Image (tube, rainbow, N blue to C red; front, side, top):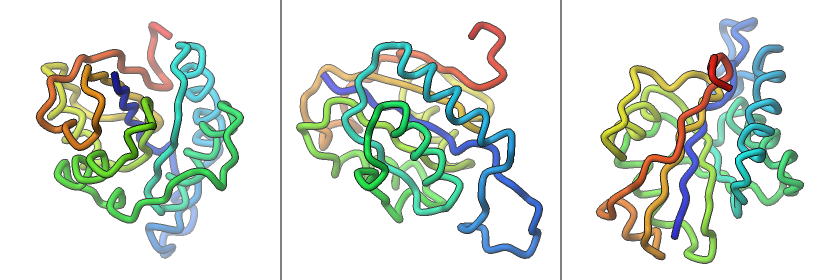
Length: 165
């Protein structure tokens, strides 16, 4: 069985309007939300084997907060260029290339592609993947290359302002 956890990066700073988009850091709320959401994920007793992130600074920092919660060295985070400004097809391509010995993988990326991707996975549809939102699915197969065509089971959707959390 495989588990895919999709995480939108935490809230980013717009303090420097002229800054290159890939270089935007997290703002104070993002720095608060990311560790909290990482704790919520860990509290679900889901073991994450690998964290995979977009190369954007805000995504990498979000992934680092999650990796810290799992006592994973930040050097072990896989940075994948295809997750920046990604379409659903890019996400499927990244997932298909994951190593089969990783049973649970967390991917950190961006909107609008991340919302489109999660809405392509199951019959659970969301209007917008909020910053630091987490959407998780599982599949019974054992090979990531089969992910796109395998039936996926919705596990949960959580986000920082979730009133049920």
